[in-house]
Length: 122
Image 1 (cartoon, rainbow, N blue to C red):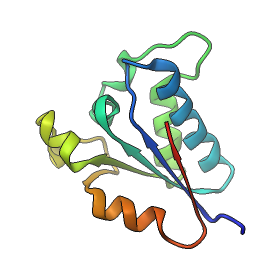
Image 2 (tube, one colour; image 1 turned 180 degrees about the vertical axis):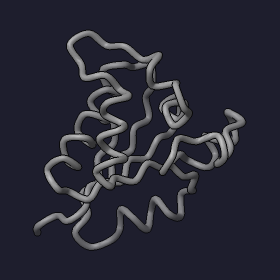
Image 3 (cartoon, one colour; image 1 turned 45 degrees about the horizontal axis):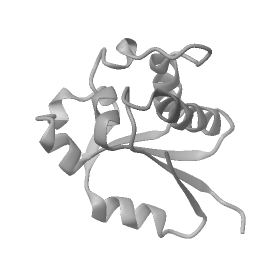
Image 4 (cartoon, rainbow, N blue to C red; image 1 turned 90 degrees about the vertical axis):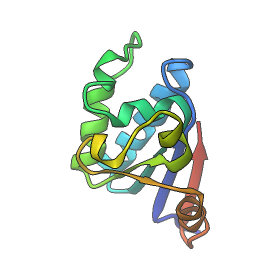
């Protein structure tokens, strides 16, 4: 089966920087390669949907997170923050970076169950 869309769920933030960076890197590379990408931010990665928060993240020998996020956004990738994760952190839709949204498990499940979708969890 040829995959048409890549759904990536990142569960780590600054608490697991390598795993977090890998997810954003794969998403940005996929978008740059012409793949339709949906990046889901859950847990501590939810913070990176807020303006300026990605600039606080640093990992040696890794692409800067703000550049990866911009590449995803500009390339047409979708960035979604988990509804429950946002609520636990008092994050509202109005707080998010341009182009990001808040959505729940029902939307996630519908995305990963669609034909031609490959899902990854970091």
